[in-house]
Image (cartoon, rainbow, N blue to C red):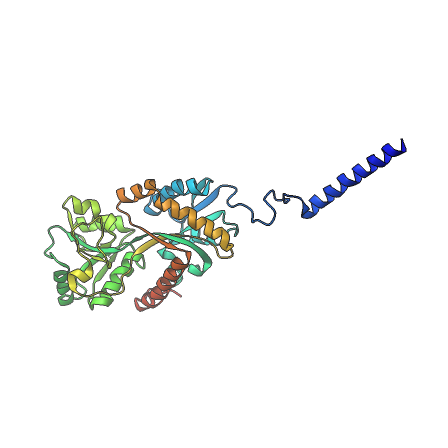
Length: 337
């Protein structure tokens, strides 16, 4: 009987010791359920993608198309949530203030580098850690098909000879296509009469109706009207032609000159304190989403251009944009700071 009791005591002591060892991390599994010495797996739950503009717009539809493909590679649902207002500042501010765990990603747009200079919001590119850039569209100078100007040179010569007379419709005072037109003025020594509208679509409608002489909007925005023969694009303000406007040359090809072009872009960002290893997982997942045939097909059908830059490249690109607009906006007298 005494011998049985000693064996039982030894067995119980061994079990207690092994339990204590496991509790102290000496077992094969950590308390988090991941292998000892390895970082927790990310992501483990759905990711929210904040879109700072209304549902149905170009930024929203592009984000939803990317969400559908990226979730294949992130192995978690990517849910789009629209947070509108303030020219994008409401949604981008909410995204920058989210938890820095990688589960809230924000679609950031060119407005992130203009809003602070316009005095409309304190948010800047420095409010985010960049995940990657996904899209870029340049401006294209477009006129009616019955316009007397057949080339970019003819258009500029007329503008120089008649300062302030050529009416250029834009997407709103201080909006990106107004800034693109201002950069064109600065680079060519011309002076236009800038007519603001509530977005590019109303400006194009005004052009079709003869209320303005030209618009400096993106190729996808005029694609259908150019194809139908109602409008004619004179040049693309970029260093390469636009695929959706075949036969339309770049500004440099047309004039032999170039300047600091301004276009619109979209990318992804997370709160600035998000760990780098999480940002890398997101960058890889969304990049694969952009390379997915389904997303490529969506972008091609809508005349949109995929331009990927990784986090480091995108961060530098946003910095350069911020500095460019920091000079241009005050020169135009648009700063309300």
